[in-house]
Amino acid sequence: MATMLPQVAVAAHETAPREAKGLSDPFGRTLTDLRVSVTDRCNYRCVYCRTGEGTAPPSELPLEDYGRMIRAFVSLGIEKIRLTGGEPLLRRGLVELIRELSKLRTVQGHRLDLALTTNGHLLGPLARSLRDAGLSRVTVSMDAVEPELFARITRVPGSFEHVLRGVRGARDCGLGPVKINCVLMRGWNETQIVPFAEFSRRENVVVRFIEFMPLEEDRIWAPDTVLPLEEVLGALRSFRAITPLPQNSLSETALRYTFDDGIGEVGVIAPVSQAFCGACSRVRLTSDGKIRTCLFSHFDHDLHAILRRGGTEADLRQFIEATVQKKEARHHIGETGFLQPGRTMVHIGG
Image (cartoon, rainbow, N blue to C red; front, side, top):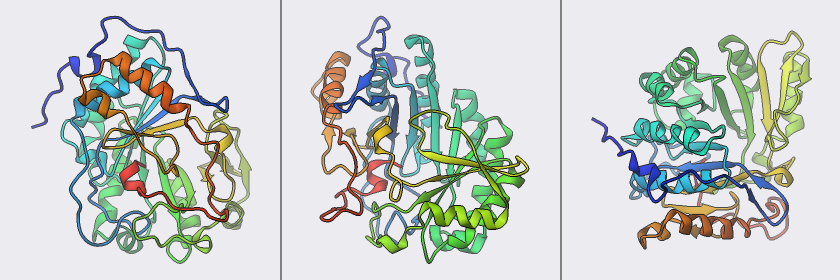
């Protein structure tokens, strides 16, 4: 049985609401999106993320501590929170954390979007509880619609049916529009572009194709493993004519399309071939409580250390405000001298 989080877990050190004033970096970008990894454990070993062997000790904190750090971010103007991992549904008490975070909508007095990224394996039985706790929407990582290929990518036999049940369960209980994230890798799943377009239309979900980024443990990334934007669009056009859709916001990462009959939606997130750093609105909190100002940063900033020293919410806010002033202007993938970060995606948070 999940341990109930005390109400004070999110509301500690604050007796009255504080007006959110907004976070801005040195380049004039307003930071509104926070991604929080609540564990680096995962029940999959996807080839573009984990190694196929061995298990390192998990890196995770008490859920109450994430709640306190998230509250400090929200008090500074964060409007979107995405809980990630690893696989966040492995954390006992996650539903209770979401229930507590949903209360910040009232405390801070502004719209707060609560989202979750999951591999979907455990989602089916939990979808309704997550929705009832206050989760706004869900994104499922799913890299093939052919069960055998899916199992080869995840290295978990029989995994596809679990994920399909999770996608349908989330859609049917109102956690939509459900988004599907597919990382494309040449030599692995480039044949899945058209089947995913069909899947979007058939299952009434939004599909996002993501360029493979150099953040995997096995270090298999190379420029020729990336399927760039135009190649993906060409494959989609071979299926049906596509029509661009307008951006939902200036910081949206996906280029969105529908088909000539208006059924289905697909998008392409192209951080390698079409970098969108100029409109970046994101900041990340790793499972061990460190702020990452960019996925490809070589530096961590230990926010949880403030809590360990008994710091107040004011101390957390001060540290956050100072840290975002160190946010990088852009990544340098493809440039001479580019070095992959020492920490990989599963340790940073997807």
